[in-house]
Image (tube, rainbow, N blue to C red):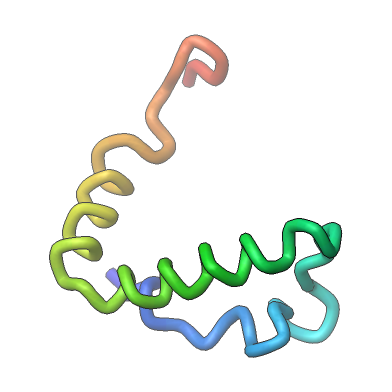
Length: 69
């Protein structure tokens, strides 16, 4: 299984490759930068990575009343 937590995207300007990006109202820009900085700090924590992997394994893609399989 490939580790998807250690990738270089998005780049420093918030772009995912040549065309993707983040376009938000100026009023939210400061808040989003704070959230991004907090995530960058959390993603270095092995406990955070383990919990995220557990949630992906047990909850992401599971059937729900809205999207049954």
